[in-house]
Image 1 (spheres, rainbow, N blue to C red):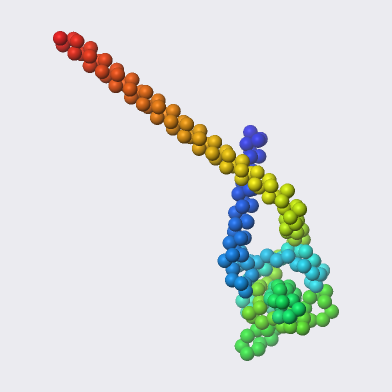
Image 2: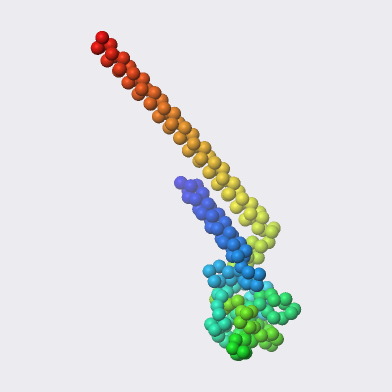
Length: 212
């Protein structure tokens, strides 16, 4: 009983992992070249610098809710595509220190909490991705762990492949068993039909003998 429960639990986890991986892959593939991959309007990023410490630490995983420029307020932490040529349009995450209107559009001045000065380049509405709504050091650590091939292959890829192969073998066995049972059932039906026909013929022969 315990083994069966463990088997179903492992299967359920493997299905969830595969579904999440496929969903994440589709979200990346279906996202435009200039967009951030998103799932249900939220994007995931891992912070690679300490510019937002102590609020958000290096290697933390952040969840960014995609939103319009009108929803952003001073003090919000936002993720955006940096205009800084040195960053080559990389995603940056800093706090909004000021909001201005330029030609009918909102422009944000940002600053990393740990940086001594505000960012040199402002953020326009086109560069805005969204507002940070959650961050986690645990998820960031797991992300780093999983992205490491030395860890991913033996601890995740190999066990997952083993589970998939096990499920495939089990499915084939079930299919063969079902096919064999169908054949046995069909054979039993055929034998029963032959016996009934033979019985009917014997009864018919006895009736003919009595009439004579």
